[in-house]
Image (cartoon, rainbow, N blue to C red):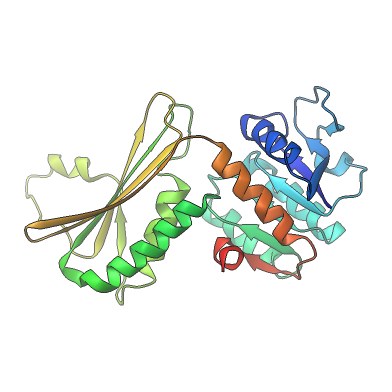
Length: 254
């Protein structure tokens, strides 16, 4: 039985994770962390340092501002940490990589198995289509999502860049070029990334490969937040007992 601590336990994803765990027999939630300590069927603390219960793994769906505390606690307890929060800076990502040298950390921009399959298919497409196809990514999320572009869009772009033998740049703000007097054609060494925010869109990602007289589109649409919660819980169970290192979905699904 995997014993889980949830950070962000009273947030939207925290409640979904609690529901997912309640329907499983291989794991249980022993404690939570949240600014809102409203009672649940397990104790909830304001900070991770206050947690007294013995646990096997931490699942984090909270806020990037809490990263340092989580890494400190994970290292002190030698406890695996599943990071499902998005919006980290480059400096914070470097901290995650450094911490993984001493404790087991699972870090991915998207907990959906479908999205991770999409990344694999996109890599295959890059290899087959070659440099003659322009690549554009369009991501759509609800109007409460703060970071743009999404971490998942960047993950998809990064995955494709691993298969390209020359440096690529990400173009986020193409509309600003409209004001330039001298118009330049699209750079072949760029991946365009566009963000849409509106309504209650859970998450949609589309990769467009545009060539001469043909277009190939790969897409994924999330219909509920539960797919991310299921992936996070699966990752938590997977990480139980793991050695120090940086893990992601590729290790879990193979």
